[in-house]
Length: 240
Image (cartoon, rainbow, N blue to C red; front, side, top):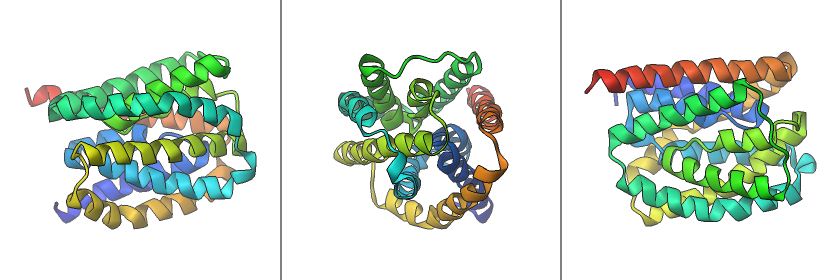
């Protein structure tokens, strides 16, 4: 990987980490389209591992605000969804994966833009957890289903609960990807190389939390994610 390519990915990871630590989701939606354009081999393994690092730091910071009961029901669905996502990834060619990432992001953007808000009761939490498991393991983008079901939460509760769910879910995804051979020495090496960008992004989130109100954060994630997904679609269609 060239210095330019690394720099582009590192900047994307930095801003995506800041977004993740500020609103509890969005790292995959923001970073995955950029990473897929520059080096698709970093998806989903390296990106999931970096997201795990961010969520661990947020869980420690917001531990007193986590909705433990809601997280538990969401994880009931995440386990079978993770297994299905790992099997799906093993069967997907690289171009199909890139287009799937773009599709997931655009679908999440569309639904979020219209403001649909399901009630976070038991059934919806389990279904959202299962969907997040499939998408998160196969594409590194598991945020949209959980963001929809927990979008009524705000501040520390949203960040802490989302991060608690994603931390455990990401560990499960990493385990399944390891079993299917999707994580190797290169995955770990690039994870180590990108840790500094992740930590800086997390540090910036403390400033962003004071600067951005929830509405600004939401629309920033929507606009940037849609733009990234659109570029990815154009790139993949142009390569046909």
